[in-house]
Image 1: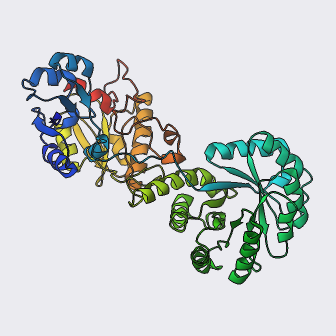
Image 2: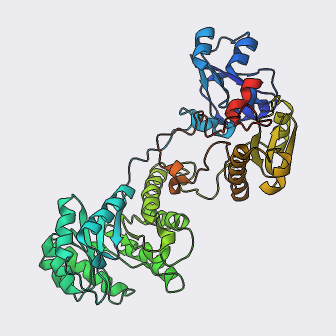
Length: 480
């Protein structure tokens, strides 16, 4: 027999809740019950115990995510499990694993080479520290970049030190002496060998990355591929990604042609030629390039973090490669898999329309300020009124906290967060830091379940003398 779930809600959300459940095509039975309140966020555990007189024979009760109170006590009272659902209705499908399972992001097939570009200028200890940072961000291979006409006397020592710490190592140079030294010191990969330097592959065991001379010459690339195949040695091919306006479009075509001509060879893409040389946020560029890699079975990339705007390129690539593999293997678009790369915007930034916020304000019975955002602006309200504007400074005269520095500071911080979120199209929740995906501290904790209730945050507690205490949504339902 299918599970029967009771969904408790408010009057305003009832229609949307029913529609959301129906769209899920659930494999459980359900009953939707309005608990005699207008706004679902005002429902409390005490209210449920007082007002819910019939559980409709269900197996489980699901209450709104913002419901406050002791649900364990409710479960004991009704004799069936009472659980919190997600804070927002649009997250309900993800809450039910039966209807949409979360993709497995523990797996990936693309290998990230992370280049330490300034390796000749820093000592071995600094190289190890940088390599450890890159490995934490997801790098699989540490690439030591050799600079033209720049001595690298500690190259061999750096390779040996990295190997002793368990790193895979590549060395990037066009100088034969550097590549030969690197191979003899134990480098796993050599970037890059061409028709003139292919002899180095006979001298060392390192896996070569092959390029053409000149780099756009497909016939030259075909020849070095054939020679390595005749040797029976592993190798990687790099058709070279060129920067925008310097051959970018042609280089994309070249990658496609290499895959067409050589269906089974390993290919590398140096994504840094785009992320470093284009002043645009790198997450989107990395996503597009790694999507191309996923389609063409390019399983190696060379990433760099030289420019300040590209300081998270490796971490971005690590998440993107997992998303792309999950999307491809499940034959789906790379959507609704993980939002960690949506730093500036979000799928549903304004969960409550202005009409529902206005309804919520009419139900408030205390002087504590609530702050919400919608497409119309920033809204701050309590029992005395609701004020809306896009400029926090325009809202300040309505707050009455001129003589209460602590609360003025608190409201200033929250209104600033709200302004940023409203302008960018991000989710804002009072007392919670804005979520910047993997680019912010809130993106570091992967154990947080976005469908679970968010605990009380940094609310500034009201002092006894404060005529206008500041409070978060987590405190509101106590007075309902």
